[in-house]
Image 1: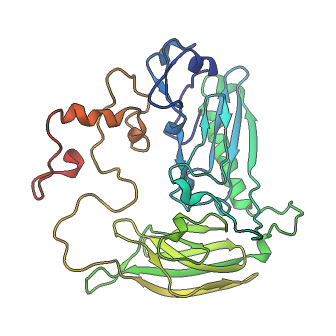
Image 2 (image 1 turned 135 degrees about the vertical axis):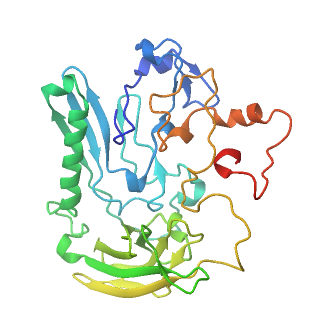
Image 3 (image 1 turned 180 degrees about the vertical axis):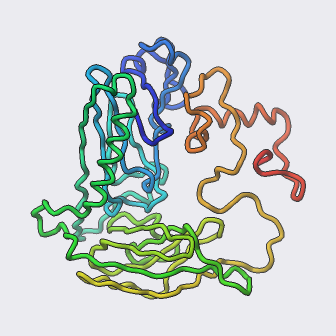
Length: 349
């Protein structure tokens, strides 16, 4: 199974879950007598393989005999809900391959689509691309098929939106528009700072951060360059707000005016400035506001569970089963105390 260049592994069989021990929730099963003895003591949990929308373009499986790959390729996020940081499931034991369009995973009721009596609604979801490949050399090196799947993924992304759908509700490339601009941050300094590597997107009109809860319309996101320049391409005509989230800067940006995208248009918004919420000079802070929490201390999993083969991967170490139990192990008598000025959040928080 492969989700990224680092998140790849041999997976258990369905029968291994049946013979295993269910843990604190039904999705987590301790493998006690797996078909592959190397997996004994591991915890299988489908949530371990979740991914952010922005990072999920291709995932799938490679079978050993014959060496065949089966891949789910998602060329666009425009029809997904919750924005680029929304997490969802990718694959799990089965072998199962998913393409989740709408779900409440990691979000709850806010992302459940709700309708009023008589409310009209129409949305084109997909298409997604199922890709099968085969190569005899994959018998010794399964990553051959993964690398090929990534190449095909890049082709499909470049081909989006597709030309073949005949539905008039599916908007073709020449009927879409482009929005460009440059974003700066003004955080109580005399010099504007480019909003480098920020995620900037168009989503249905709302308030600050509403794109995270939006679930009925389309969203179009891109990543700004080092100078804060961005181009959001292939946008379906409609009325949008422009939103942004800037790594290292608290809060969320929203452009004050609606953006009206029409077929074939190119809209230049020029330079925009985000003024983060601030009531004075920073006295102290913990961590980095980049929506990952990767900088904080993550304990080792409980010793009774064998960790996954890529447990040191920063993408996934926080997903290990049972980490919450380690708090009482680390602090058996008194709660954690964080001393401002002397404590280090990478070790002490």
